[in-house]
Length: 94
Image 1: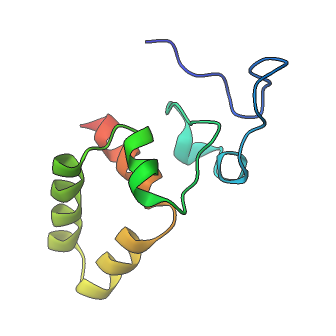
Image 2: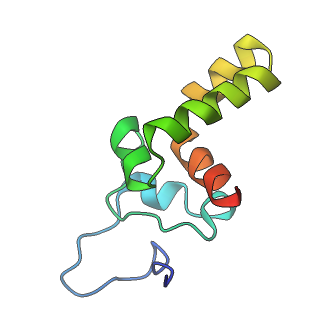
């Protein structure tokens, strides 16, 4: 599967510009991931779907985090705006 072009590169003359989230989080956390140009981390369900992190896998990841971290820290991590990126990274390493 060919990797998506980096978000900062133009995908084509008529391609929509990359979203603010796609630009903001481009870097080590997204290395090797296909970051959608229209990524909106404010819509968690859509972002998880864009990264192909489906509900069953997502529930398992959340359970693992809650088992490994104290309740407050687990909540902060899973509730963070960047969580869909981390979930995609974790899924890709499995």
